[in-house]
Image (cartoon, rainbow, N blue to C red):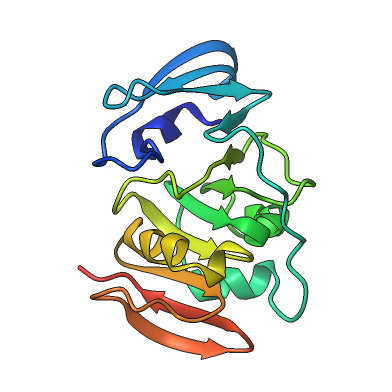
Amino acid sequence: MHIELTDHLRCPAGHAESFLVLIPAEMTGREVRRGVLGCPTCQREYPILDGVVHFTPAVPPPPEVTGEVDAEAVAAFLGLEGPGGYVGLVGSAGSLAPGLRAHWPGIHLVAVNPPASVRSDDGVSVLLAPALPFKARSLRGIVVGAPEGSDDAWRDPAVGAVLPGLRAAGQGAAPATPGFQLLGAASGWWVGRAGK
């Protein structure tokens, strides 16, 4: 897990958003390989093992993204330019991380509940979580794949995690989040702009 990602994370437990405290035990450069994230609100502790944050003990891995949507299409959906910040890839969208790294060399990718083939390494942080663990308005973009893309409990917070005016994309029905501006939908995918 990239150390600065801590500032963008929240406890996924069902309480008001609050910060997390990181206690690293082993690091490689800016990557935390082993440690603990703690929530001062509910006192929960979440282990970081082999660079993966375990907000939940186990999550069945989703399938890889298949079909017409690939890393190049997702890069076009989000329309990001320039380095810096974080982009969330939820569920099967995590399988697009290697291709997206080529499009966005200076942007850190955060894969939440990705397919088993996705590893936490330089440029990609992996989180296993029962709910979206991002603070509101903290990401440059997000892509919600299967199975989370069909669930309002994931889709709406995903749109809320994006900085105002930037884009979110996903698989399944488009969100009905207040302020969200749908830009397009086709072949089971949607893309839109986060509200202000």
